[in-house]
Every structure is written in structure tokens, then in C-alpha cells.
Figure 1 (cartoon, rainbow, N blue to C red):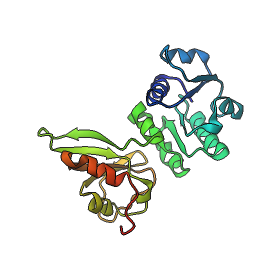
Figure 2 (figure 1 turned 120 degrees about the horizontal axis):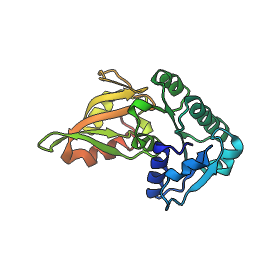
Figure 3 (figure 1 turned 180 degrees about the vertical axis):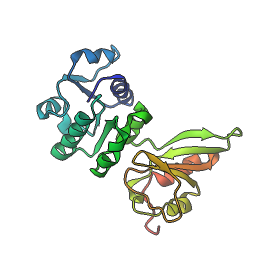
Amino acid sequence: MGCGRVGATLAQNLEEHGHSVSVIDQNSEAFRRLDPGFEGNKVTGLGFDRDTLTQAGIEDAFAFAAVSDGDNSNILAARVVRETFGIENVVARIYDPHRAEIYQRLGIPTVATVRWTALQVLRRLLPMGSTDEYRDPSGKIQLSQIDVHQGWVGRPLRVLEEASGARLAYVTRYGEGFLPTPTTVLQENDTVHVLLLAAEAALVERILTSPPAVSE
């Protein structure tokens, strides 16, 4: 929902990843932002209107992103999609960062516009494993964001370190970063950033993007 700069970029990225995409915008002129070769469905209407959502194929959707320029519209659409149509992978763009925590507690992942990129939305819709965020000059040490498997939620972050051999650098929760303590527990929708040896990146990613071992 929303075919502004971010919405158009996100739609095209998803299509490039091999997914079928529907784009909703109340202004048909907005679809001009899409590349001429875009093959997705373009629906003119309100993204929180049930008939519009049905026309866009929401009943068969895997994920939904509300990225219009209105906080209220985005949250309303996200809640309709989740509560009425049962879509679990939902993310909403929020301009007011003070509202983000409230909406997170409603179970709707949000991204404040000051931190906004199409990639951030894509990560929340489709887990992407790990992303290399920084490397030291030697190239041996890297800071990576890893999409941790849901099975780790509720476990102390030290357990993730023990299982993977990586070091938890920081966690982003409700749009705010913080340094974890030995007793910090992973919560749903947390974004985890780890320091690791570049040579072990594939192994760390495989461990943390998979369910924890029963013995953990």
C-alpha cells in the first residue's frame, strides 16, 4: 500500500526476487513511479478498504507493507490485513517515532521514517539471513545484522552467543538500539547485530537462522 518512492522501490525489489506483487494507491498517477517493465497488479483505492484489498489479492498474500505517507492510514491498513485477513507478515511505515512502540505492542512491526529504507521493509517481510553492515580494515572482523529464527525468542541472548560463537554487539528494539546484558532476553521483532569472524559468517548465519537445538 503506497506507491511513493519507497513503495515503488519495494515493489520492484520484491518482483526482482521472484515474487508476484500488487501495489495499492489511491492516486493512479502514483503508478508512474514504477518501471515500465513492472508486471505486478496495480490497484487504485484505499489500502484499508476490504474490497480494494480483496481486488489486490490479499487473501492469497504472504506479506503486506503499508508505506503510504499517512501514519493513521498505514496502521489502520496493517490492522485490517492482520486481524481480518490473517496475514502474519505485516509492516507499517511510521512518521512519528513516538507512536512506534505503541504499534509494536499491537504486534505490528514498524519502521520510523528517520531510519527508513526499502531494504528495512523487505527484511521484515522476507527474512534475508544476514547482512554485512561493517568490516574492519583487515576484512577479518565484521558486524552483521542477522534475522534470528523465531525459535530463539524468549531465550537469553548469551545462549545465542554460546551456540554461534559470535558476540552480540547491540539490539534494536522498538526502533531504539541498546547494549544487551548477560540477562537480556530476545523478544519478538528484535533486530540483532553481531560481531563475528568473516570466515565463520556462513556458520553463524546457519546456526542463528535455524531453530535452536533441543538441548539449548
